[in-house]
Length: 564
Image 1 (tube, rainbow, N blue to C red):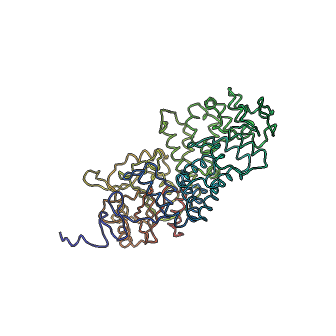
Image 2 (cartoon, rainbow, N blue to C red):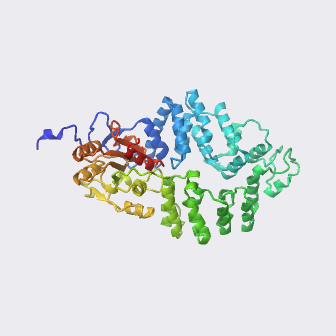
Image 3 (cartoon, rainbow, N blue to C red):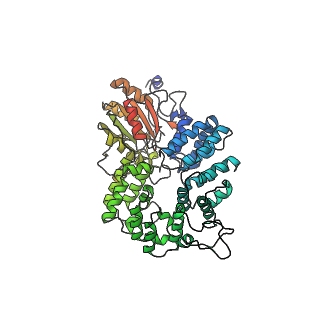
């Protein structure tokens, strides 16, 4: 062997850098480093829960937090805009990263940055739970100065009273916080609205009125009648205003003991949700039928499917109603339901067993099918690119890790994401790739038998059972060239921890272009929030995107067409 033939610029082992710009990944291979703006987007959409195959959760979280801190120091207003865009469009499966990043932005030295972050608080913290999470995160970076107190106070004073009442009752406490805690910290400016003042009093344990002292607990009916506790006269508000009807209903529901009573309270139509009912009510089929009849929010409905199945609610007409609601595109959009959360719900429900605990159930087929349809519907309408597309799934060992703290592995999630494009693009092929070698299965590229005709849970099981090996992300291009497969766009779903191959992915792509005479594009769909990518940032025909961004199918199609 001529040893000089081992040195060159067009073919470099992944264990060595191909360009001075490349950096080492956690697996020991060399890839490109992504910019902080991309790092922040990965963090917002993918999160860091659970870490990766090579990186512990704590280390990955610190690494991402440093990227957010750098972005906040360099352009805090731009960071806030990025957070708001991801949050309001429902592009992330979890709100925690956005709230954490907003807490950082609200703590910067730059005055305009802090103002922008605090002004965005109600747009990102849309529920009481979100507000509690933000309060916990922001204390990690700053104290409760006047501007923070005012921003939190405005969260309570600037929304309509009926919506405020709903938040106070539905999200009474989370993450070690209560509304009483935040109202005392924020001390909202006085309000002339008696209903809002009564709502504040109720949240701080003083009952539904302007009382000199905290009254004894009264039922909703007693409150409506203006009943008082002896020795503690009400100063104002003899009866409960209409805007606070949901609070009175909550008090009534807590005092009730029979299904008929709970059904009657729900039937008043003031928006009583399942979280506002006592535990005893949640085992009653009649109660759930009443809740469904009045409309259970989409995310809550998905989470309660195992319970509804166990108590026999999903048979007959009620089951048909629930199936129709689950797959309703308009409901999915209005509720900002993220497709990955639908995927988790579908996979969990179809399995008949919870990821935690010992609960089991016999899945209802039409409900599992409705969740399957909801997964595709949650992405919205995608205009196909009409290009020859190779969907390449990294099925190496590192992709067997759970992703974002969900009961789902990277390889299972990537297979489900690929199905959306497979359902859209008529000219596609799907392969799985993993490298061979000593100690590994001697497999490289396998055409996969997956497609929209197979249900999501079936595809996840099939993908989980594929043999694992080392990671070589150049294999899709190498295989396509060896087999003369004509590809306009390569979609590679990976954690970017490539290290095994004798040629870098971007070099293999260039070689494919030259030999096949096709100006092929490459999209790298990142499944973890690391700082690496196999996509060459200097090549405009290569793109790196976050796998859990709900806009992924549209981005893939637009890039394949050349629109971006």
